[in-house]
Every structure is written in C-alpha cells, then in structure tokens.
Image (cartoon, rainbow, N blue to C red; front, top):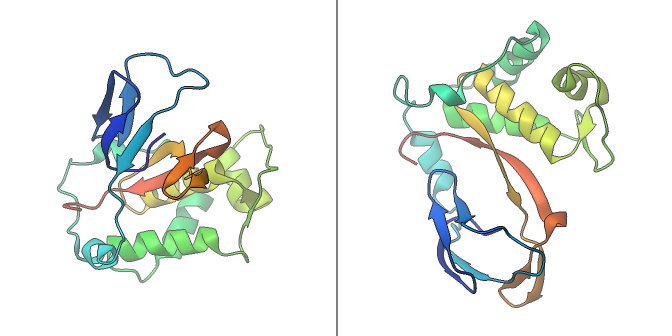
Length: 186
C-alpha cells in the first residue's frame, strides 16, 4: 500500500513504481510483518475541479478499453442516461453519477452486503440499493461507461490508522475499491 504518487520508498528492496496503475510493485512476495516507508505527493485538489471541467474529450480510440461493456439490461442504460440528463461536460456527468450513488435517499453504505445471485449490478442498483465499496465503484464505472466516460476500477487501501504524526499503519482491513474516470490531459 502507498498513497498515490509515491516519490520515495525505503525499508524494502526491489520495489518499483508503475505510473500506469499508480502501484508500487515488488519483485518478492509481500509477507506479514514487512515494514517500509513511503513518501507520496498528495494533491490538495485546489484547482482539480476547474481542470477537470475544462478537460477536452478523450481522443477517439485513446481509452476504448475503458469504455467496453458487456450487454446490459436497458434498465441500467436508461438509468445512466437519466442521471446525466442535461449535463454537458464529462466532469458534470461524472459528478452527477457520483452524487446519485452517494445520495442516502437512493443507497445505503454497509459492510454487511452479501449477494451471490444472478445479475449483481441489477440487484445492487434496483433491489438491494445498499452495498460497500465494490458495489458502488463497480456501478459507477459501468454507468460512466454507458454515458461515454472512460472508467476503470482501482483496488488499493484507505489511509489506515495514524500511529504518529504523518505515519500510518495500513493493513488488509483497509482494502478499498474506487472508480477512476479518464480526463484527457489531467
């Protein structure tokens, strides 16, 4: 685990950074008890919204793999279109999807979600209307792709527990999934 944009890793050998995935990659197995230190650049996000709103559409073919979808029920595609109706920028569409899924009038976040039946996306969006990070992130990514936003899922960790100022302990209990949308030039 590392916060996005690691710039230095110490305490473990053979670790590289893959900028494509934003991941630290080790040439050895990670074992329980391995301790290392990561220094990362953290964006304050002061200008992010303006940059995302101004981002041009992705060039044709640039992000095709992040637009691919299997056959979906029309109920899902109709929902995606309803959520972004009237939105003109990719940023506004992504924000509308986020706000819809975060709205407690529509969905409830719970760690006690357990569904292994058919059509899990349909079940989450239209029946259960509750879940945890995997359901929310997966639903967002599919809905985003339906409306033409290149999206993918990222798997990593939350910040963990701060054990001293600036030092965090991150364990498998901090595993997390979130969606990412591609914005050209950002």
